[in-house]
Image (cartoon, rainbow, N blue to C red; front, top):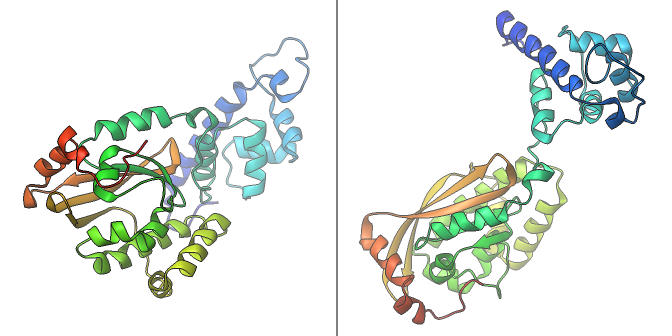
Length: 294
């Protein structure tokens, strides 16, 4: 199970953690939760090892060896069966993969964490007067604050995919002072996001739409450059206040791996912070030339 680079001590520790983790997860699953009769008094809480094995469709001896932390061969399919029986959360399932010595599956949001949009709305609204928006894994816009509308031109009547809008929205493009320099980085970062889910048809749909609507995107996509999401500098020309220089930072929330928060921080140049504060003021909003975010 261990890789060649894993030391004996590290392997022993990992398998010990696997043993303790599986025992603790098994102890918390009641027989009734697994569709089994209680069967009277039990010496230990939760399911028995043989019950986990039968429900997961694996051999009793094999599961016993797994829970004992022995160095045995495991497969993703078998671990998924065990995770299902033990009612593991997405985070626990990934943890099981790591302890078993396998590459973990992509992060997923647990059902109880999906209702976080009110808190995320408060987060980006608290970032005012600076622009902030939230995207899903495909870079579709989920939420944006008023500053993102005023400064970046985000609005309901354009493509709600940030990649497509980057190449097709004339308002956004007209404001980017160095659009041609930024475009290759944007495309390379989207390819990096695609690489996390290589078989996801959602990414393919975005790439096809962007390629059909923008020859510039198609040319950059064919370069196959890859860059991780992080920070990059944006210099813009706003019709009301002139030059704005901000730093865009992509943030991930472990509980919501399906979302990316993009915060724009003013840099010291061009008195950007003061200009953004004025744009968000009642006077600045009256001068806006397009609808604000609803």
